[in-house]
Image (cartoon, rainbow, N blue to C red; front, side, top):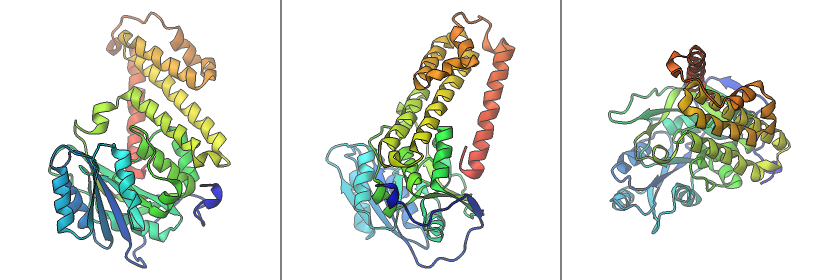
Length: 369
């Protein structure tokens, strides 16, 4: 895909508007549910899709060679419901191929990726499709997700009070400056025609969804729904992210997401070189900040501090000219004073806590850090 193939009539500046009330037609949404050993969660997840109002729903369950009863549950759901379809893998291929196989046979105007342990909130698809119908240049719509670990489900807000529409490149540039993923996953609705043009999920271990959001924003606009909760995301110790992702792995995977992004069609955008440079400096700065944080935790974290300094230098050799890098790099014998007794360390940790709290507050209100 080239820049010439972008969605026409794109936004020229970000705008925040009141939600519209009327829609011209009833849209069709294809929900692809990837399932691996989540048979116990599958019926509730499917029902959260089938109960959506003011939309036509097509559910495609892709069982990725589960070893529990997921296949039997999925087959029975497809037998009972005419708009539920089943794909069964004979070997486990992972979440990327599971979604891609389902997305390729989808027929809806819009597309949702849902893990079998997550659920859509009531009215989620009506709210998100209304945004996309009102702004045809929007290829990615998302809102606020509710995270939960056990039942009962947290009570969702069901009334949108505003929409923000960003020019996709503006939203992408902001992600390049932060280096963070602002989307969980089940709260997203995609315009399927744009997905077909830019491609499906890339084979990344943990940031395949993040890279797709970035790619969609490179070639279409992005919308956020304020005031409503769009999905429930289940957190448990058997999830992929809980079992395999730590801080260092997450850091490397986010870097890989941007590498894959700019090695594809987005690499041909006029501002791609500038965005690449922004990403490089962003992650170097994050590594430097993390090294400083590790040092503030006390002498036993000296090795981690040095590891992050090495990463910062690899990403941006000019970081060595930063006074903070020099101070941290020269620290080979850290004071034996416990970090909780070290006033500068306490101040630094408090600063980091305040910064994090402010970022999360902004995300809960506006969908961005």
